[in-house]
Length: 325
Ligand SMILES: Cc1cc2nc3c(=O)[nH]c(=O)nc-3n(C[C@H](O)[C@H](O)[C@H](O)COP(=O)(O)OP(=O)(O)OC[C@H]3O[C@@H](n4cnc5c(N)ncnc54)[C@H](O)[C@@H]3O)c2cc1C
Image (cartoon, rainbow, N blue to C red; front, top):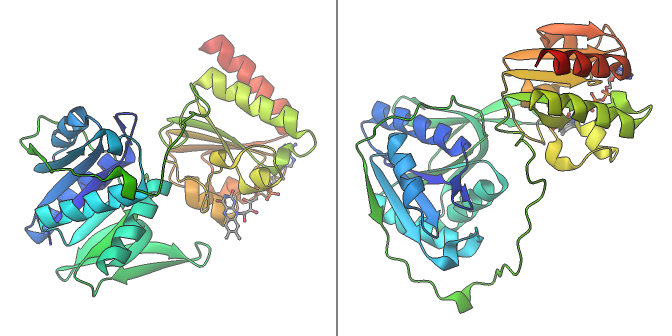
């Protein structure tokens, strides 16, 4: 089973979770006596191809063209099909971001492949690939095996450890690209980045999150969360209850239907610790919970717990960290 891993990039910068997937692909390939190749699509992708080699890809297929500068499903899926043929791959892996998820689904449809979306584990059992994914609101973990010739899996970011960059001994191979712009239905007329300068939630080493516990004064509550995050150089997260209430945009949501995170430190303020929230942050190294209710489930998972009002605790922590850092 040869493996092809799509390396997602934005403005010439690879999305870090792809390296986790690439490392897992190498492990699977070693177990199956096959190989794992990477695919980088964009406009001028040599630097990312070298990075992929550094992360151990034996072969990196590249497709470079101004028409591929930004992600567009139709031409990207066509390039993936081309790369699958070039690599003779029967397993296609992406990271389960919005783009990775849509690319995986489209390629699976176009090729009649079987798909396991949002997988949290991948392994070889009896010589066959098995993917684990959460179903029924995360209450059941299902193991998925494949009967199709092509297996496609999108992998939740932070499911596997980030590999170390090495010297690498692989090589890059450019795919011939011929794109008829007039046949592409998706046109990008403008591109505006949101939140420039803010720490990315999925890559953050420290996250400070707020929940419905801020309800007494949501504006002030999230301002306090933000102030602590600023002092710690952390990203801001939130529970779904806080997002649904409109306290903070969806992109900050952590959990089963939000982002999966694995920071060194996760501070949860006014978050009860519902299973769907824990699904997204339960693997954080150190969890600090701030909650008025000493019986809140989050304390069952927290490394340290503070039973008190977040409107008192957050400013106190911010002041203390300001002094010490
Ligand atoms: C299919 C499905 C998917 C879901 N996906 C997600 C997801 O991705 N992410 C997610 O978070 N949830 C998700 N949920 C929702 C989840 O079940 C919970 O409803 C949600 O996590 C609760 O958010 P919360 O902890 O902020 O609110 P609550 O459960 O209402 O908890 C608020 C907490 O704040 C405490 N509190 C109140 N005032 C203060 C104060 N002043 N100081 C300190 N503490 C205080 C309370 O004691 C309480 O523990 C999902 C649910 C379903 C059914």
